Amino acid sequence: MTGDDPGPLIRLYGLTGGRARPAGESFDLVAIVTAVVTAAGAPAEPAGLVPEHLAALALCRRPTPVADVAAYLGLPLNVTRVLLGDLRREGLVTIDRPRPAAQTIDEGIYREVLHGLRRL
Image 1 (cartoon, rainbow, N blue to C red):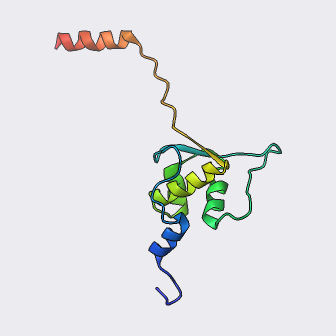
Image 2 (cartoon, rainbow, N blue to C red):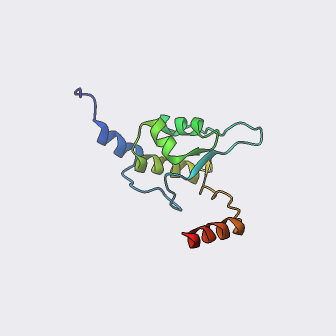
Image 3 (cartoon, helix red, strand yellow):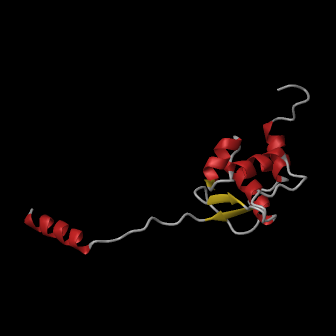
C-alpha cells in the first residue's frame, strides 16, 4: 500500500457511504438484476455515477444474478448489494427473485416408487 492509497476498507466505505444494507426491499445473492432500458431501447446511464455503478449497469444489460455482479466487480457481496440497491432506487435496474423451476408432478412415478419400496 502506498502513502496515497487509502486502502480497500476506506474505499469500500466510501462506495457505500458507510451503509451495510441496501435501501428498500432486501434481496439475496441469487436475485436477478436487469438494467432498465429507455424508450429508445438503450440502457439509461445518468451522469454522476461511480465507475462501479456503471460497470454493474453494463453487466446487467442481460439478466444477471447478484452473485455474478459481485464476482465481476470484485467487490464483497454486501457492498455489491448496496450499490445495486442504489441503482434500483434510481430506477436504473430491476431486481427480481428467481422463479422456481416448473415442477410437473407425475403421480404415476410416485406410485411406482411406492410399489417398488413395498416389494423390498
